[in-house]
Length: 314
Image (cartoon, rainbow, N blue to C red):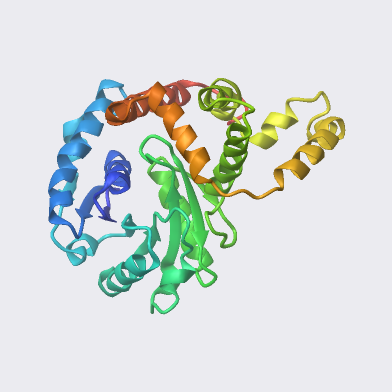
């Protein structure tokens, strides 16, 4: 049954969430505090939907676009909405102000969710009368192509709200995972951060070039990780499963982890070096074009994964 969803923030993530909800057949009210950003959002959203239609991932870009309405105030967006997805600036102050307003105007049973990449919900919802219905629903960019969403409660979030949130995310085609307690960066960004930390070290130490490191992931680890996670990977990489793998290779990884324990900042010289190597591969003027290329490749991968059958249900 079609319902109404509010999206606060009409930037890249907000537009992507609007697509997620509208693609699932729901009405979406899109709001942004910047009128110019709001005015620009629908044409940009339509361009994304045209690409989805061209890939056969939706039937009609026009029909999905028609379900999204730009509104002038946050109150207008929240009227009758079952869910608010906040997608504004990544600062505690901005989120606190928006959630205070949303808690006043939202329907009593509406869920208030943040797209925060690292800031936990407790930092901006503690004083709210409706704090029990607040949580983080952290997506992967762009969420209309990468379906994972991390559901992370504040210490006071009602467990029933988390269960409802999981049901809502399932119903709109997302893949929800529960982050059981607050941790900065949640799970995905902590995993990504661990890989980036080692990647920066390896390049800084002259072990490998920036381009060859990217190839190591995209043509190596990334191929497996596109359809199974690290625990399933090692489960299948030894005849006896996880325990056998750990018995065989645990000593190697312990030695590696001892080396990797050294904490380094992303120093300016290393950043400059990586920036220089990347610009040789891809000019700054081509970044936007390459982003479109990335999204279309993700569409193709998504289409393949939707069509693939897996007897184990993965």
